[in-house]
Image (cartoon, rainbow, N blue to C red; front, side, top):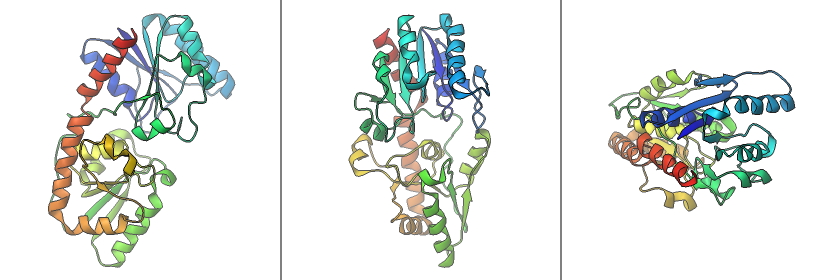
Length: 306
């Protein structure tokens, strides 16, 4: 089984490829363009041509290396608009997986008629099933050896860490307002906004955190929450009520924009609760996001379509 992971989304293709290689498979990554967080790929194709020509060049590049792989696992985007290239890959008898990652499908739905040529469709978070009902949810893996448990510590000043890759989508304005109000009431806190920082340095900010606030609007958690929980940090994030059934247990402090201020107050004042949430978070990540478990599930899907 030979796999090409195509895309560069939050380091996810790279993690899958690495653990697939550790399980004895040939698995490489291909990205088009440079990721702002500095994730590296085995093949990196850069071009500054107009979009229409870029799409053609991407497709031609995949064709160039195609004979080395049996399975093409696309993350976020295909090479041609609307998945037109999927028809090409199927004609060449390749197995194709489309792995939706968020804004590629949220509020849009499966508008690509050529997705019928995909052998499997996956989504990275269960809220995306609303836009792709025939897809399967595949949890994002996290490197548990890199994110070793450290828990919480006793401190006088509480560090609140927030990592807004997109301020509007993450609800950053509410985090800033809640922090300012907490300071005005005399709480000793420090808000750390982590933006435009290389991926390998972000973990150092997680380690400084006493509380991590993830996204407050979408209704599910992102990679920030996963990585923070792996370290044993308590996480505030908004989980939609209709999605709670996907959780084996609740490891977060379920927080909306309207409850953020009060929830942060509770966590600031209750060190024991911070510790308990940190422990639950690590247990949850080991159960749901263990890279070996996730990689094994993905490989089983590959076997189903092979």
